[in-house]
Image (cartoon, rainbow, N blue to C red; front, side):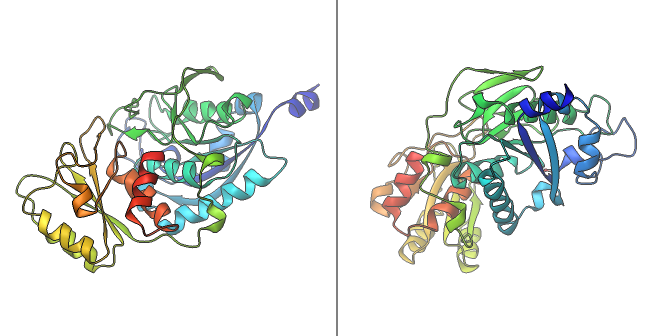
Length: 337
Ligand SMILES: NC(=O)C[C@H](N)C(=O)O
């Protein structure tokens, strides 16, 4: 009987990368003071025996780091392993445990470059497993349930946090002290409750199978940097980033990606020298940057990131620059993905 249930269950691989979901604190009262990336994947899986009721699960420790330290090399390494597993006949779904600080970046990266319709679910936690009311156990159980569920196929990379199923493209960490930390400006795709998925909407942007990018063709990622807009800003950071070798600079602008008059001449100059200038917005609940609003993008040959926040814009710019150096093509990609 047990063998029969196992046969019916999906095969889900958990790729562990670290983060607070693998964190440990000195006492159960330490919900915010702890060390991330301490607990191995085998121990995490052993702590949730209920996983075996929703999928045949196995784990792999791909890295063990706090996600603020993720590099482009780490992204590529993870992306390649996901692609290998997705190609494997005996894998039905993939879960990635990840720190929440850059989870939204990794989820968007995978959403762009993985050529599969198999579910890929990225998950983290806001409290370490050693804390009272730790959220990692349920988040991971939900992630495995969603990854093992056929209804999750073809919906792009997903994120399960706080019982919500979010699109990896849209979701962002909005607050760092609550378990209700991840939000999308356009709402979650669905809910996962007691291992069952309930869907309400679908992503409209190109992803995975419908994407023109493929991790298998990406050897390295170009340097793309972010500079922050605020009152009294100077052009020092922008110039220094370009001098450091940035191929594109994401302007994390105020409001509609607006650019201070003190910075405009430097950005015009950098563009003339070949650096792509991409205007995004750092407003908290989600920016919405439109072309030729606030700045004459056509005249300056700049690109707008539309609703992508600066850190997500960096991901798309890096991936896009592996294919084109043309600003019009870049802009098309920023509308489509
Ligand atoms: N909640 C977390 O996971 C935060 C941690 N600094 C990380 O991103 O690895």
